[in-house]
Image (cartoon, rainbow, N blue to C red; front, side, top):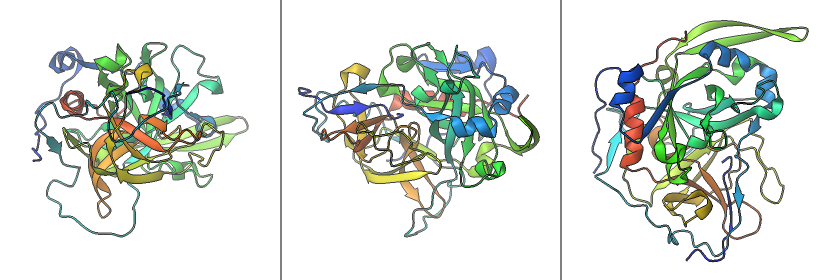
Length: 379
């Protein structure tokens, strides 16, 4: 029973190989081809405008996004599901292999080689002044397998604003982001990818149900940007970088699996714990490893079907991947979740678990609709 709750907060916050359907889907035809519960919308911001918006100064000032959501609870028993416990398959398990992993053999490594597929997404809050730094935000995300190698997986709350009831503006993805020096190209070694189409589940967009806190974004082919500053003005030169999946690969995708899996989670945490401590900066990628279990109910977010494991990630890690069967040699595995909610299960004002929606057939329907959308070069 979900009696005395512990603190939880959004941080940010048998394999059946499934063949991707043939043929691109665009415009009204794409909408008609989607499952009834899939919400697909083209980005409101023109791609070139979105990329040009994110100057080095603005990138540096963007803050981790947690949606300002926080709820206290007590008596959580992680692994037993509480009044949740609905994390069960709704059909046969399935999987789509990672890019390059269709016929690959497993390799072994004692190190954790960070995946090139994972990076940061930047966006501005809709219906606000984009020039105001308070509206510059970021989450984490990962490239994932798709027919046209143009697909990014993240949390739905990293693409859709439930307060304004619309998708974010100026949305871009920078894979393998690293903020270790002052050379801008070092921060975006594989290019910058602007959103074309957001794909999410109707139950998140309409009902704000965090059991559906996942989204898949079709991005245009990337561009390499070099910024130069003259006085107070930035100038840029660009060149085409090609398709996202060709440059960094893409994680596989799997659904209707066991709730008890050994997974890695990757992301760019930066926010503080409830006690105010900030152990992360968001400048470099971090990882956690553990065995998932069913998470309890969180009524405020209509959450009954999430899985999680012990991890101290904070805001900024939202949208980063849960990866099952991760191979260090290829730096790929199978996307089985995305960072959605951070939990303080022992009430010491420190986040100690991270959770994801359970990926089932509903998730696959959203993925399938997105995985078959063509984008091409930025207009």
